[in-house]
Amino acid sequence: QVQLVESGGGLVQPGGSLRLSCAVSSSIFSINAMAWYRQAPGKQRERVAAITRGGTTNYADSVRGRFTISRDNAKNTVYLQMDSLKSEDTAVYYCNVGAVQTTTGHEYIYWGQGTQVTVSS
Image (cartoon, helix red, strand yellow):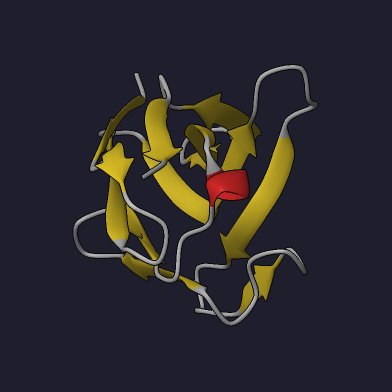
């Protein structure tokens, strides 16, 4: 009922940039907050950035000033612009959304499949 399709990962040199996208498709859900998480090998998954439906954003200290989260509500798509990338940004990045079923009002959490970001020279 809700599908998340991520794109934009890849290999980039330190100091470079990447833009991740996550498109959400659903006919019976309204999308609330959207976020990006990441998980590096041997580490716990951590939230990188989040954005409310109204556009309020929140960032992890480690990425503030380098990453920018945005969304297009008409397209149900969230973006993560990553600049000044560092080797420690290497991880699998996951899209996360809160979706409210319009008929019941219940909110459910959905995850994307993940996209690999590797920062290396």
